[in-house]
Image 1: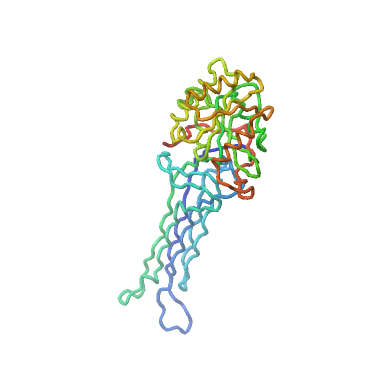
Image 2: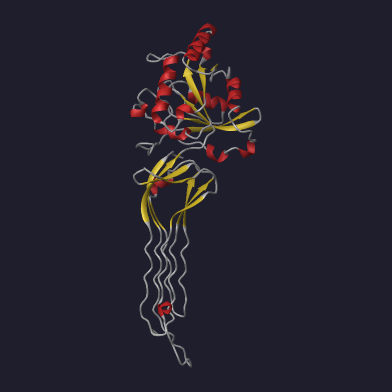
Length: 358
């Protein structure tokens, strides 16, 4: 299954059916008269959040949605049938934005949530409704009201409890594979993760959803690397884990790596810079204890509240980090976990364009 987190679609609700012009013609009935019925209402455009979806890929192949029109009015005062609404299913976490992306029209945060985005047109009046004491044989009728139409953007923000951030090659994919049921691609080159990955973490009898997003680099807010468009998937997380490579890179030691990511979070906005963050020095199996202590002290001096030393490869230090994560999460049993949000997605596909409408 390919992953797509935004799509532009066209919507049009159904037009109302026209009223009828008809007169009674019955044997042995002395007086006739108008008996044209009203037209039926057009179909609404309804969005519904459903379980089991975590991608908008279906909207890549179907971009036009038109609800059916109402039925025609008929003689014998028969009203036309109202059209059924067109129900469009979307994943939980989907937002509907205006065409210019300046307004959020709907935000789906739980399974079963329904929103009538466009209402169908009213049915037209038949000639029976125009009958008066002075106008006993009206021939006028009313056409149905036209439906509403608009272009909208769908934007998906995956629902996760915990977000995993860091520079490329910080070991995020290895970490999420080690602590959850995810199977993220691992490689010794930058940007092995091209789209967000979700996994369910089970720790001390509790479960939570962990999201891994592509690595950030300096200038991501300005479009460098993959940019910051995937940060939208962690806007609703309760806590972030900032994973830092203890071995460093040519361009950033651990303290510099922390600064780069924090500045990119602040540049993105959406209050990400104020979310609780747990800083973790990863790959501690590649450094001696003295170096670990030195970097922990350096990160604490740089503003980190607490620094964990972990190894995604060996599992060292991970239980202590997960214990700290649980302190930020509600006490939720396994059956109450958002399991529908954690189906794996394919990394072979993505979508281009800016992420945030703000």
